[in-house]
View 1 (cartoon, rainbow, N blue to C red):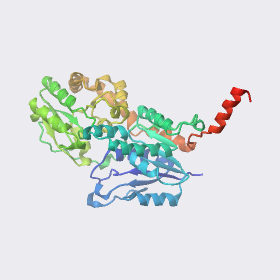
View 2 (view 1 turned 180 degrees about the vertical axis):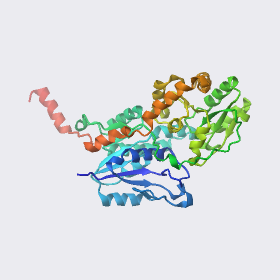
View 3 (view 1 turned 180 degrees about the horizontal axis):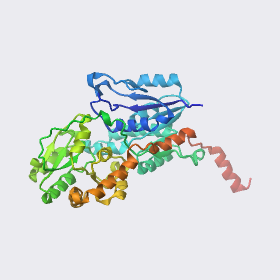
View 4 (view 1 turned 45 degrees about the horizontal axis):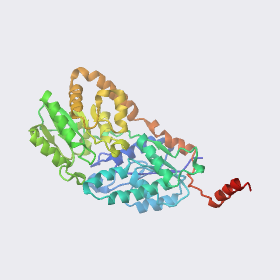
Length: 415
């Protein structure tokens, strides 16, 4: 008998009409494509503002909704056997839908520690308090949880134990599994094929920092690494994308530019701001090397790095700092692609190593090996397929105090 599965995820979906994408929509695409063989009913919580002409695209097999209340009513009406919710916010919303179905909830990153970084900027932990309430609800209601890294998996297991999910009835049950972020090439034809007309010297070597200065970027290490690498390689330029001032409430961009000015590097830095997402492939292919500099904090250690996946999938080598799980996997492929967090001297040395044409063959081999795992690999979703094949309900802790006391008294007094 075919199992009725509903998959609820976040938009936007990548189409010719798409204006922007984010980490959540990339995760949604991964789940939609990776679970296709199960034939789930796919529902996207999305906004028409994410598409040209303020209209949802027509995509076979996918329904778009702007109001979660409509999704909730649909799920209650259809009464699925399984409800798969992709990404943190969607999983929180789905946790409030009543029903006797099996709940598979995806935690795409550890939001309490993402918010910790923002709370540091605001010097106020209220955001963290709110997001922890959501996380607790997801963990308590889900039968099966997916994480983006092994570290996050163990973090969730620890949280389950203090939320009443470690009772004897759950012994031997695999309540949490890792679904690493990966990408699919099915949508590649939607990217614009035109060459970007950027006013950057043709003979320069282009270092790409993809994305905005979020709260776990080490902007001081980034500019120091670039400055030192440029001393040996005068043709090196740095390309920045994304928002400038007041990004995520922090002043990292302002601090970055202040240091760049003091080092007389402004003429070698090109901030192109936000670009049409459909141009991102052309931008990546235009550059010679990507760079990711993270602070060594819990967000980095527990989370994923979509910017690494995006650059590598379009065959751009990336020098990244060793904090996230993906960075450790890359280090196994080629240690020259990874450096210690905060070590600008090591990063600069490896930037120049990776830009040396003599080393191109070994770097291309590492990228090829990386994409064998993280591009078009549906087996990454196997833990969900295994759960749906042999599902179980997660039980909450059962405490029988009277029985416990009676047993103690019997042993003590030989009753």
